[in-house]
Length: 557
Image (cartoon, rainbow, N blue to C red; front, side):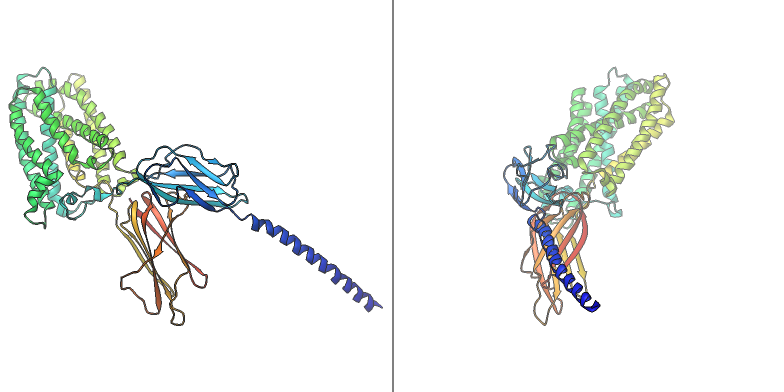
């Protein structure tokens, strides 16, 4: 009896479980269906399209998604070639919540990055980045922008970025040249500016003016010879004529020598205006030969450099003349010191402002100060200028009190001036920017090999090469189903990855590995839109649908 009841209960239980399982399966199916119907949004199309080169600036950027997106989270931005946003405008989302857009100001020539980050209606974050180009932007600026050899049509020795023992002669010539330039032009400017000149002033202006002009001519000849020899090393003799007749730097050197010779006539002239114009011509010429000539806007860069040179000349020339007067005639030194102390402080302020503005113009970021010898020398120069300000304050205090300038302080100030001129002579020759070098990485593995090359590895146009070796199966070739190359900015981790559209190409290099199949892919374009630290991510889908991921970090300037 009990057995019959147990059997009956089991039958009832089985009959109850079957409908319950059916109901659970239906509920699971119902719950799963919305997830399939509402998969997270993906970008279907963009305006402008990725990797497009346009003649004119687009009025706006748009990203269209296949599903609805949240309106209160995320956004879209456009960055320029320095990774700065081009507008502060707010993005808008369409009524159907499937498009996000951003109105743009008129953009100039350049490579621009569109970066979007949204949340789909089902709560999934979605992000991505791509580039578009407006016009024909110039090549990215790095140390190669300061390579004078390019004007001669040969590669030379590349741009100088570091101080080496073999270049000491070059630096010596530049230090002497800058000293002669600043002292001669500074003395001429003071002669033109100084009112109520005494007989002692006129006598010493003539005497020391003659020495500075002689020094300028001799040092300029030495400077031109040393730099011309360095530029023409290994080149045919016939190219020397080309240097001085077909290149900007060679022609400017000829003008420098002519102005140095004219200095003797200018010194004899009684006209203060002629002296000031002669000094101004030399300073403007030097401005066009400096780093500023490689930057845009050119007028602004040159203006900063020329004003900075003029301030340096007034300070250096006046300080040297004050020391000469102090050694020759203390009373006249006191009279000149009153005028010099006022103008010197104005010069220091001008030098500080123009120096800061030039640094911000030359360097994309202040961290670049520690990437090159140029930056380190600039820091040293800044420290020396701070000492100059301190000694100048003590000198001005004595002069305002009616005392004669302190000889010790004058000598210290002149020593600091000499040190600054030496530093300037070196760092005006080397590049303010680091040199970019091609990136190449080869990874060996037991079951796969991988090569990534980025040439020349600069912000802007590059060639990307990916090589993959996969083991053969039963003696047959094995090729990936899909290869993706993604670039991620490590400086801006919030930006989505930029996909580089690599395509198969025929590789002529002999780099085969036994029992491996080589597959090669390549792309060319401005897919590195701004300088910085980057991570290249290569995603390889094998014939067995296994995904292999390689990541390599690199940087450019």
